[in-house]
Image 1 (spheres, rainbow, N blue to C red):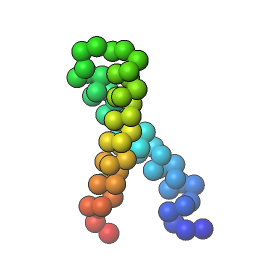
Image 2: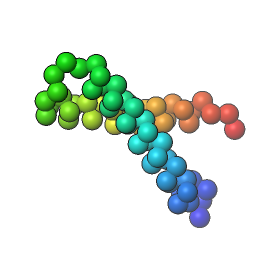
Image 3: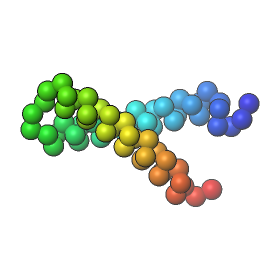
Length: 64
């Protein structure tokens, strides 16, 4: 089994993505004025894209 596919690595990656998503979704909710269904969908989608980019960016600059 490769180091990147171990269950622990997968759980850590999922946890990091979830933490980024939660922080970005909360920021979105703080900054908008109206909270309706469309705003929630757009916010969740933007937070998901931001979480993926944040994880990719953090991994790109990590010293090995």
